[in-house]
Image 1 (cartoon, helix red, strand yellow):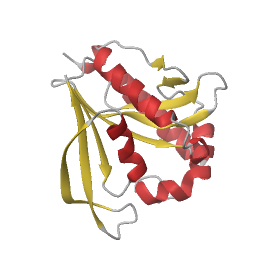
Image 2 (cartoon, helix red, strand yellow; image 1 turned 135 degrees about the horizontal axis):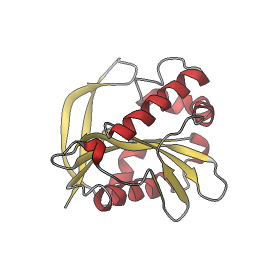
Image 3 (spheres, one colour; image 1 turned 90 degrees about the vertical axis):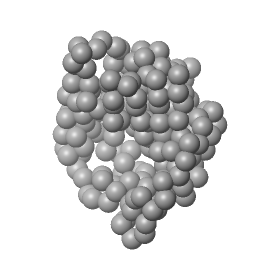
Image 4 (cartoon, one colour; image 1 turned 30 degrees about the horizontal axis):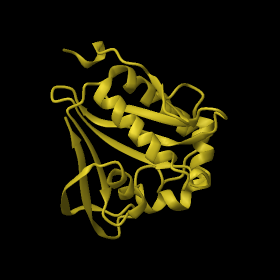
Amino acid sequence: MNPILIDFPNQFTTERLLIRAPLPGDGKVVYESILSSINELKEWFSLFAQNEHSEQSIEEILREEHVKFIKREYLRLLIFDKETEQFIGLSGLYKPDWEIRKFEIGYWIDTRMSGKGYMTEAVQGITNFAFTELKARRVEIRCDTLNYKSKAIPERLGFQLEGTLRCNDLSADKSQIRDTHIYALVK
């Protein structure tokens, strides 16, 4: 079956959060969040955090990801406070394998929102969404072994550490070789 024919909601909620696909016009809040969090993001993200972006370039990226969501190629998700509508962070279900029904969750949070349990709640919600709406058989989280905040989330949520890929990636600034933990839940 062509994945574009798979129907599922483009948004859902958790206790405190609205989690949804990107929409045209989201570039402004995401850009402002990146600016406020750039020092933390630079440590872990090589693609967008190491290069300067404009509000327009972020808007372009999100519009492209909106199209990829519709085509079921890449399921970017934006996280908002359900009551205040304040932007909290980005996540998504990456590298979808529709035959196996396998997905990888990635995430980052606006530094100003960190430490309140939002990302743990979001990842739990996204995991539930993957298993219930997308009929996932496997959900993975991969993170740098030195990113203690990031790896605390799958550990809190009961993901199993399946292994460590040694010397498999470069640090975001490309100055060091790094290891990656692979966590997973399967059904």
